[in-house]
Length: 242
Ligand code: FE
Image (tube, rainbow, N blue to C red; front, side, top):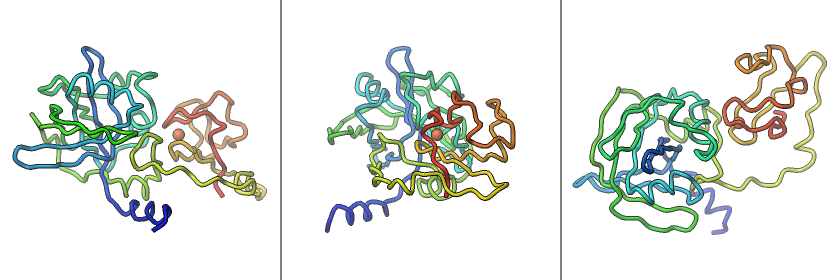
């Protein structure tokens, strides 16, 4: 089987979406992860694969503890953008949400979350770009009943994209000049633009009033210093939707 065939097979694997958190002394951070799995029942143990580039990796490696919050299906893209497309080196993410403190001292995010747990690392494996941390769950709490956000729902219904540091990230195929040029516009229509980083779609009809862009503003007239309201990408990281 060639590489492309292998990638297609891997796309059939299913996942959820979670916020994985950790701490280092009094510093807190968290990130979105799709790879949280239960690996044993007695005792309850879970594993998570985290990119070595991420701040959360540094915190888990040094503190030996991590928290997991299971996101609900209705989680807004803006929340995913904060935890999944921004770095804790640039933004204090936990100051922008609600959390409780677990037995390990990890922050456990409770916003848009069905249940939380925290774990102590008992083993870890270096798998190249990522480390798999195996943790024994020391506490857990159900916050509410609901439908968990799956990776498939995130991609298919929310039109979310995969962050570059995710274990499932695929390098996009190079696009031709024809595909990247603006589509032909019919008079009186306004083209929607999509963020190449997170998948947010700018709809000129709706604008972005929260950030000072009135409904009815064509993308071309959006101020140059405007950024994606979900992930913070700059305007030049948007492509017209065909
Ligand atoms: Fe974005």
